[in-house]
Amino acid sequence: MATENIAFIGLGNMGKPMALNLVKGGKKVTAYDLNAQAVKELEAAGGKGVKSVSEAVAQADVVVTMLPSSPHVQEVYLGGGKLLASAKKGALLIDSSTIAPDVAKQVAKEAQAKGFDMVDAPVSGGVGGAQAGTLTFIVGGSEALFEKAKPILSLMGKNIFHAGANGAGQVAKICNNMLLAIHMIGTSEAINLGLANGMDPKKLSEIISKSSGRNWSVETYNPCPGVMENVPSSRGYEGGFAVELMAKDLGLAIEAALSTKTATPLGGLATSLYRMHAEQGASRLDFSSILRFLKKA
Ligand code: NAD
Image (cartoon, rainbow, N blue to C red; front, side):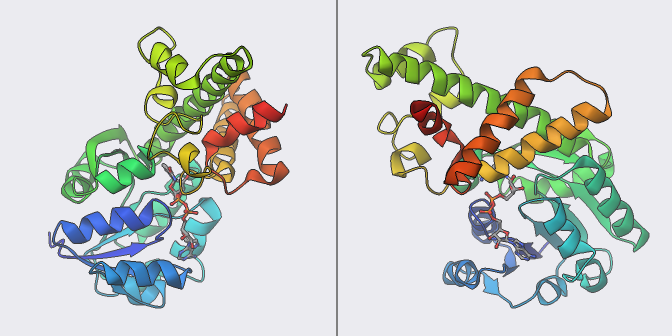
């Protein structure tokens, strides 16, 4: 299967560095985003920018989408974006957005009915992982399609997992992100307690990182400004994983819990905390800013 020409739709915090890694991997990348500035930046780095989804996908062997949420994916694939109506026959479609598993299944079904191969391939690893090309991809689709998508995903990520059939990538991803929200809040709560009791947050984070409270939020994505370089907390919580997107993912986890009558008490509490934080004006800040919310509480 030819994979030379790749269309990339959605050049946000994650999509832009992912598309850049495809350019670095020798692919011809044609990209579109509603935000013209993001398209210009990709062009400056060697990609080709166009003015619509249809134009981006027309000659592409592979299409990658990295959009905020379910309605955006439905709009691009099935609605005004006309992706399914414009893509080249036989193209492989990869949606890396985090969306509802049912929507992932519905879009894949419609894509298959039109003769396309499609997988859901949401990611973990944050903007740092997207820039470094070390993302984890969690793929939903047949084993054969997983093998087909793997060489492309390997240009943007390090760990590529096959979760199961279409939609399974999204199920695994929302379970992961519910846990991420919970340990980010727990980490912030612990650091805030240390701060209130005179502890140096850097020293405290070092201690926790080598003790039983160890986790990704404290070790790799510390929420306290000044503890770590190159993380959103040390640049005013800008340019990471938005609070509104975390609240969206928690909403997906709660929907999945309700539909299967599964108890997720901490997931429920995390959802409320992130919703309250978003409503107080933090929706575009990075989700580690929950420490700021707790400090004010
Ligand atoms: P973002 O909001 O920074 O970027 C989304 C981009 O999609 C924007 O540039 C926007 O203009 C574009 N877009 C929206 N509608 C469009 C349309 N109709 N046509 C073309 N472009 C359109 O979001 P992000 O942080 O890059 O996240 C993207 C997805 O990845 C989300 O589903 C998110 O949950 C998931 N995710 C994000 C992170 C992270 O750390 N930021 C980590 C893992 C997964």
